Amino acid sequence: MARAQRGDARAFEQLVEPYREIAFRVAYLVTRQPADAEDAAQEALVKAWRALGRFRPGAPLKPWLLRIVANEAHNRRRSDRRRERLVLRAAAASSGEAAPSPEEAALAAERRRLLLDALERLPPPSRLVLELRYLLELSEDEVAATLGIRRGTVKSRTARALERLREEHGARA
Amino acid sequence: MELERELTALAAEIDWPPTPPLRPGLAARGREPWRPLAAALTLAVIALAVAFAVPASRAAILRFLHLGAVRIELVQRLPAAQERPLGARLGPTVDRQTAAGVLHAHLLLPPLSPPPPLHAANEIVSLLFRDHGTPVLLSETYDQSGALLKKLVGGETTVHGVRVGPDPGFWLSGRPHVFFFPGAPPRLAGNVLLWQHGPLTLRLEGHDLTEAHAQAIARALR
Image (cartoon, rainbow over all chains, first blue to last red; front, side, top):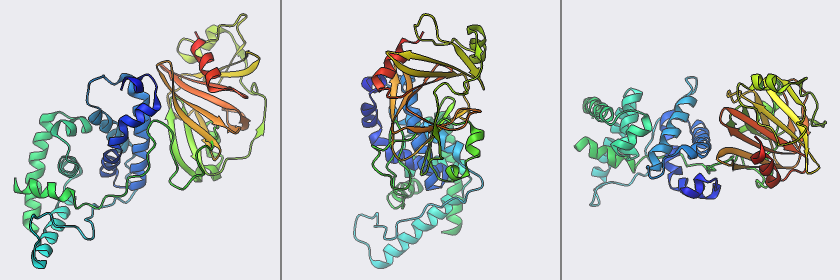
């Protein structure tokens, strides 16, 4: 970090390398457009490089970086663009521990598809907090930093979003 | 808890778009294949109005970056441009007080005696001087819009993220690039050091200017 803050671009690249994928996915969840997400993530990395001098040594880099990514993605989220939906992999492996029967596998796949559909029907703020928390497996603190809200707000928003999802999913499952 | 477990399990099943080859800290690759970026991002600083007068370039924008008043765009094809003097169309000469008023900030100057003439136009203060025999153009602006100046960068130019002391910046080098100055026609230009110092965006250009030379000039500004 010290080398990067002194202007070593290669040191900065090494610092952010582990977060490139999650940075792109955060941007994608906000914009729902791969091209916009790529632009947002790229620009965010450049802004992070420029702002690195203000980064507090010892603080976690990941939430700081994701906050920049999310801000950039929100700025690029365009109302005139069709937004993509999340989809499941075509041959998604079962998450069960034992090999399921074909019928069990089909039922599990159907349940996952319905759950994803229900998630997609949530209002964007509710949907996004669940996606960051569970699909990207961010901690509550990281979600709070990424969205620029307090941890308590993350907890309450997550609870309400889960309740809403439960209703949506239960109604159609 | 069951629903939360199901959501967590769902994470492994999502068909995410492939993560693109992001370039931390500096410029970027286009979404389309580029010749090896030894190639240089051709740098053109262009007023937004001028950019919009170049539809062919605008249509081919692949990526852009912002630094203070400047927007750098990576394009497939650069607009035509001619070589013109560094000091062309910089605006009328002004005294130091007027120049500082244009910038709303402390004017940074090279330690030369007598000081070089100052020019002001379109909220940009410029000065042309020689450093170790090399003609150098320094431009400063307070504008933060990211749209006052614009650089179009194409095939054969490289862009590196750099620091000028603690300040963030970019070093653009390679083949001569196209440069647009507000109110002036495009011209071919040499290597450029671009950086942000507080509220000011500064741009240093010179034919055959090396990064080390540009950095030395930049650090000497007071």
